[in-house]
Length: 98
Image 1 (cartoon, rainbow, N blue to C red):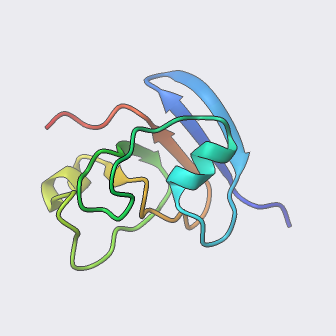
Image 2 (cartoon, rainbow, N blue to C red):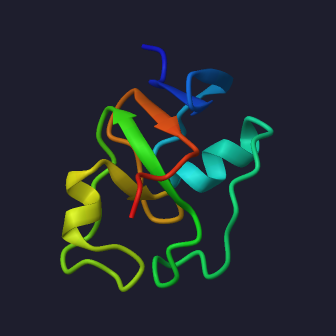
């Protein structure tokens, strides 16, 4: 069985797609696809790597780290440094408006 595909966009522009690697966060998967996502702490504390989850699932931990709030998640926000996909996902590098 093939691994789920993770697709990265900037708005409507498809930047690249790559098969997910089990247990690997979206930030690292993007690197494999040759896509650079801004980062700083890589632990969910700063919010620098925030993107928009257009489709799919990559849950955030409970309790939430300081880099993201529930209202942002409701608007589709995800921290790619700690978000591990649970299947195919479409990720927009543009975060939701704050």
